[in-house]
Length: 61
Image 1: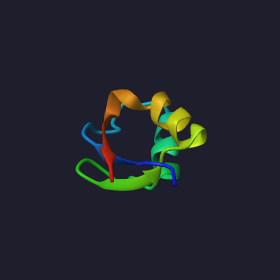
Image 2 (image 1 turned 90 degrees about the horizontal axis):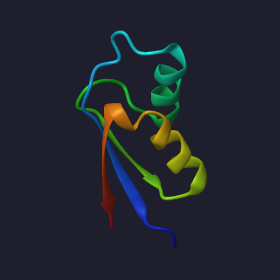
Image 3 (image 1 turned 60 degrees about the horizontal axis):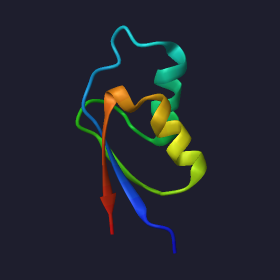
Image 4 (image 1 turned 120 degrees about the horizontal axis):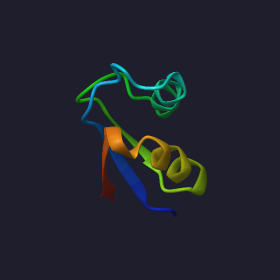
């Protein structure tokens, strides 16, 4: 089983590109302080890498 990543949004999307807001929505993040646990797969890692400047990422489990 692949490890999981806990992703926490730590910065606001005000002034952020629309593509980056869409990426956050696709990850399931709703706003500052929201968090989600996702599988550590290449597709999720790629999405996280695009918006890493807005996030805090921790290994989970």
